[in-house]
Length: 230
Image (cartoon, rainbow, N blue to C red; front, side, top):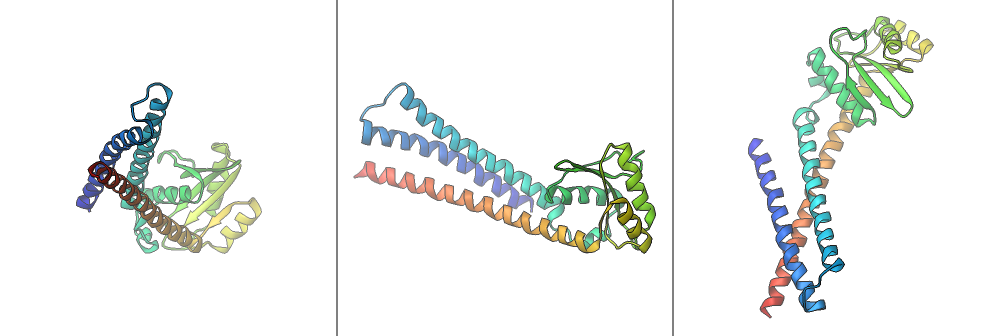
């Protein structure tokens, strides 16, 4: 895996090099064809701005690719069954990442003295106090009561419980009466599937864009060389 990542870094570095060299050739080509002599002032500066914009886009793609690789390396291959075997703290961080992919702004609370709240999540005007439970059995009403009570400590207006299992009848009844959102095994499984699928799509998209940029630059370089030869 580490060798594949190294090749990707080399690939993007070559892409930047090709872009810089291709820009210089393109700039001279445009001068030769349309202007016949190098201009000064604003027109020459405009070409530099275009080049910098292209370079910034490529660097941004590199950043996104690195970020996507970090997510893929740590989380995107995890299945629901693998999540069942996580320790409690790792499961909390994993759920936090899943919530981010679902559109929440989420952060894990301090592990000591968390007042029964493991994750604070925001979505629009809603701020959730989230209790995360990795269990081997159904979650009881105590998790719901902890989330509901903890929301006042963290100044939240919503509460939520996330688990890899189901909930007892008492937990469901308490959640309904208090407005606590329950995320059970079925919904969590859908979150995991979305995360895995979107991570793969984002990775493929970045590679396709980078590949098209390389092809475009190579085509421009070939065109310039053929023009100078003829």
